[in-house]
Image (cartoon, rainbow, N blue to C red; front, top):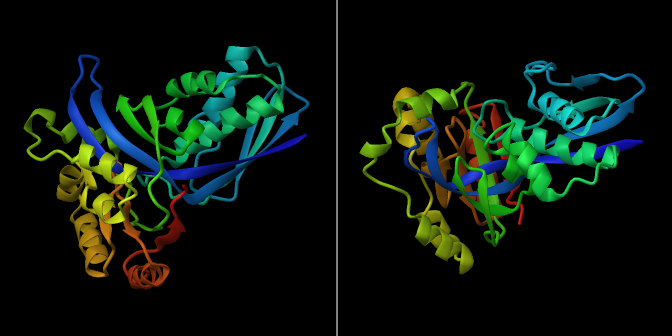
Length: 284
């Protein structure tokens, strides 16, 4: 039996940090949605009790450092599965890009193994397992659009924004999320995103209102550490994207664009700026 799963990339339309928690994590409030840039996973059962991962990408770990590997091992341990699995990962989402590629791969692995081994896990059970792997994994289990609170694992599904184009551009940088959060001073944040305004605009399907309400408190930290990310952001704005924001802790910058012709123009303009540029649709 062969199981196929799609693992779409995630973007943050809003990312706010409210305060630092006693457990050392940050209390966040985020609006997250998915775009049609995706990894694809193929899973097959193996006759021996082992986990094997392969990929056409030569730059990702294929052992226990890989989140898909960790997800498979967690499922086997938790449900006492004494079978092996071979996972082929067709990697399209850039690594360390602020697009939750690894988390989406882990979520796809949970969904796929649930089907492959007939485990009967509910969505909530998969999300609970996912929370042990990373804060973004529970959201990636279900996808769609949601408000995320707590460490990112407390999810409230909401309506999707109106269909539009998303141009994503990633510079050849590896930004450490831990470093960015480590340098963030939550108590000193002067300007928080207008999350309420963003939610109202999404509910009203007001594309212009969505674009004007985008916000990410991590931008200030990442842009100060990596001035080239600011130059990329400025370039996307000059090229005419309707709304521009850094996703997650970066370094990917995305632009929301209503018209396909403009999306193509921005895509072509950015190709001279960096190699990893994508023009995709918002998943609604």
